[in-house]
Every structure is written in structure tokens, then in C-alpha cells.
Length: 373
Ligand SMILES: Cc1cc2nc3c(=O)[nH]c(=O)nc-3n(C[C@H](O)[C@H](O)[C@H](O)COP(=O)(O)OP(=O)(O)OC[C@H]3O[C@@H](n4cnc5c(N)ncnc54)[C@H](O)[C@@H]3O)c2cc1C
Image (cartoon, rainbow, N blue to C red; front, side, top):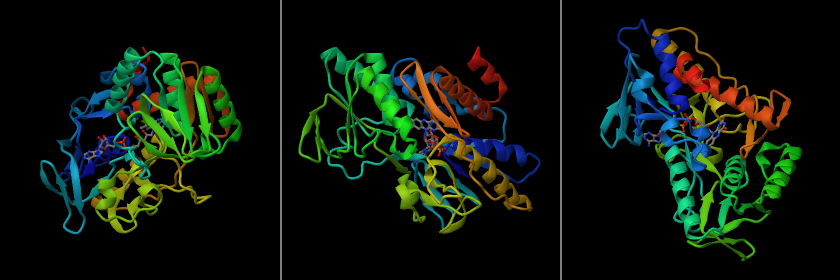
């Protein structure tokens, strides 16, 4: 049983089905609350109306086709590891082998009012809600104040898109002294800060948000920023259904896993993607939640599940993080891929090629060609 049909769960199911084709008594069950897979990393394009929700969602019935994978649409509420049962809004599902790939959710760090008064981009539907709200807010007042909490990847990309599309001022509030602090490439951070400022965004760095109200954001020094719309991009954490079920978690509520991608506190249960805490084997530092690492885990877990049921050696997971590319507005990208810096239109092209690689892994060549032409 595989929980979640995002990048991790879907690719695990597809690869396992390919490996286990000849095994008669294996049933693969894929569970998700939605009956579609979403290209989460392109959600910003919905905010700025470049893409529609339907462009970034693919029905699972289309993706799974004739594959021997049973899809069950349900919301997972709880997992009972001791008696091997997944509790959902549509009843209990017993399992023999389990993969958890339920992704992440916003982390509001207990900031007062943040959850109640903010929008965030955790799904393509969230992105559509932000798009609709931006239109409403600007229809009421063309000088509406948009505030983005968090100057990491999501905050920066979202700000670039909004400033580009709505030609309006967005204020970014970031607790650390630089944008993109977790990226740890200072020259990129300062370049991006300069560019966003030139585009019209206002940056407030080194000050923490302590409260979010319906019409203002309060900072730690007591000052208030007027806000017609507040978007929270200040952090994510592993899906709480997983941690609430009792697995041992570390940084950002992500499940601590062993070298086979099993939960250390419950070997036999695999956890992958944003829900898992993946560390760089050289530095011991947590790696960012990203599609590349998720797909690598999906490949290893599909092999290990096959070994569990058919016998054979299990595969050790060694993450290989190639890097990330960030886009700012329509015309600019920047990133470091396998040690090589790329910038401008070239960076955007590389990002597009990376996207097509994901599409290929999920849908095969036909969809890639459709995507290109
Ligand atoms: C706005 C945004 C931009 C991003 N940009 C990039 C990028 O440029 N590059 C990059 O590498 N990564 C990017 N990421 C991160 C990337 O999307 C994640 O790392 C990746 O999706 C993780 O895969 P996953 O399978 O763990 O989770 P997901 O792909 O999120 O899949 C989780 C699945 O679980 C389902 N689910 C969740 N809870 C339940 C429940 N209780 N019951 C049933 N189903 C449930 C969801 O519907 C979903 O289908 C971005 C993420 C966001 C939000």
C-alpha cells in the first residue's frame, strides 16, 4: 500500500509495478485524497494565470491506464503500525507492506493568526485561490498591499511572479538577514535581492513576524505593515498524519529514516519525499525537500519492496543532490547544477528540461512530446 500519489508515491507505484509484473499474488494499492497527480513545482504559473489548474493536474486514471495498480481515493487520517491498518475517511485499509509519501504542509511556527489570515501554496488549488484573491483585491484597490512572509525559495519565486504580473508592490518579510538563506550561496542571494527590489518589491530582512491580523502583519519590534493579502511562505513541515501516528521525527517534523528509507522507529515502513528527513551523507545536514531526491528514493524503495516480497538484496539509498534553479518573474532564472552556475534565460531553459525529465518519469515519452509541441 502506497499513501500519496505525488512524485514519491506515484513513481514508487509505477516502478514497483514494472518490477513485479510477473508476481501473481502482489496487489499494489495507491491511496490519495485527490484523483489526480499535480505538478506542484509549477503552481506559481497558476497564480499568474500562465497556466490553468487543468494544465498542471493529470487524472490518475489516465496515468495508471492498464497498469496493475489499484487506486483508492480517500483521505488518510491515521496509521496503525502495530496492527497494519490505514484509517481513512472511507474506512480502514489493511496492508502488508507500507510506503508513506504524503508530502508536506505549511509550518506556521505558532505565529499568532498566521494560519487563520494567510494563503499559502501547498497545492495547485491553493495557487488558484491566491490567483482569485489577488484579482479581487486589485479590483477593489489597485494599490492593494501584498505581504509575503518568508524569503526562501517559495517566497522569492512567488514574489517575482506577482510583481511581474500585477505590476504592484509586494513586501517580503524575512526573519534572517538575507534572502534564500538555506541556499547558502551568498552571491545568489544578493543578486536576487537586488533584482526583486528593481522590479518593485520591498524587502524587510532580519525581522520576525509575531502576529498576522486580517489587515496587517505585526513584526517583533512592534511595527505593523498594512496588508490586503498575506501569503505565508515561511516554511513547511512533514505531513502531520505521519508524525501523529508515532514515527520518530527530526527537523521540521520529518520522519527519521535508515539507509533503506525505512522509518528508524518502525523498520518495514518506508517513508519518502517531503515526509522523510534525508541527510547529506558527507555533511550530515538535512537536504532540501525536492523532487529530485524524492524520485531517487522512489526508485530505491520500489526495488526494496520487490526484494521484500520476492527475495534478494536490498538497495542502500545514497542521495545525490544536483542543485536547484530559482526563477524570478518571467524572464530570469539562477541556479547551480552539479557545480555549474547558470543564469538568465539559460537557467530557465535548464529548469524546463528538468521538468520534462520529471514528466517523462511519470507519464512517459508521449506526454513529454505533447508538452514540448
Ligand atoms: C509551490 C512549490 C514549488 C516547488 N518548486 C519546486 C522546484 O522547483 N523544484 C523541486 O525540486 N521541488 C519543488 N517543490 C517541492 C516538491 O514539490 C516536493 O519536494 C515534492 O512534491 C515531494 O514529493 P512527495 O511525493 O513527498 O509529496 P507531494 O508531491 O506533495 O505528494 C503528496 C501527495 O499526498 C497526498 N496527500 C497528502 N495528505 C494526504 C492525506 N491525509 N490523505 C490522502 N492523501 C494525502 C496529496 O494529495 C499529494 O498527492 C515545490 C513545492 C511547492 C509547494
